[in-house]
Image (cartoon, rainbow, N blue to C red; front, top):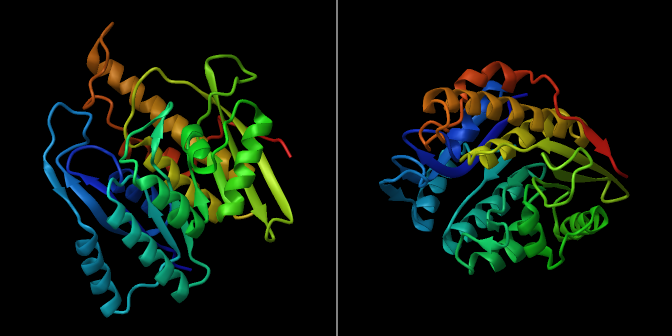
Length: 304
């Protein structure tokens, strides 16, 4: 069966972020991807210079109407990431709700991008829209620890806290929650960070929870969150009731892409020099084989 994704994310001419990070890996794994570009920029904003255009909520609606008029608006998945505009986000929610009425089995995968390490990097007025409108219609969400705490109003300082936060997020709507990174201590030492996942089955009668220890990398990458959400979409599709395997595949893809990127960046930068943003662009095309069939290098532990 053909599987079609509507991906509403940013686009860059050069490099990998948003739809550029999500589309190729999903296509490699056999998904049809229809992209709406929420912004079109020359490159991501971590460079010294960037230029481009931002799509408004009205312009998003016009594009969606065009798809609808041709009666080609049957989707299996919707995927969204970073946005800075409340009206745009509310329009996304309207579109998701309408698509779910047309296909009640549609799965909405949302990366609720709000901030990290204790501070927001989107306008404050996006927070209530995510909490009250977006998360309730989402099926799979991928917050970091800060975002999970913000959405639930509960701090995470132990694994038990994290499980409670994931349960609170389940109660808000999503059946699958993956906290992509946390400040919890890793059992493997301080060179690893802890991620946690939780998946409800049969309307919450059973819940599978997993912990993943992920090697830290000393570099700032852009587009990794977008790649992560896309890969979680793909691998939960292939393993719908097995969060452990889906997470192992997803995190292993991330590991391979990041390792290939960091090696190449250091090679370009030369000994003792920190790689620049252009040098740290994800090595996506070069990682095609790893995306299709990742060697499992990150194992998930079932915690309950």
